[in-house]
View: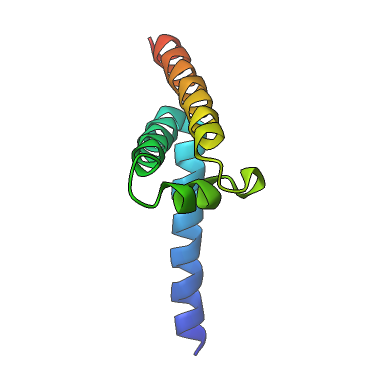
Length: 91
């Protein structure tokens, strides 16, 4: 049983170090992923179950699709500006 615990512990340590490496040395990768996620959210807000997706994305707006779309659009603009800043800093 202790061998399995060691293996599990090493796997967990590897995952934590990988996440820490991404946060410290490749933050633009995480920002690109969040931009893709926000674009998917905007795409879902145009679909058939837009009110449900709006409630899932921003429950405090109680399913208001237009306000959720504005919120996600503003968040997307901030992420793009942040990515642009990281691109300038990388050079």
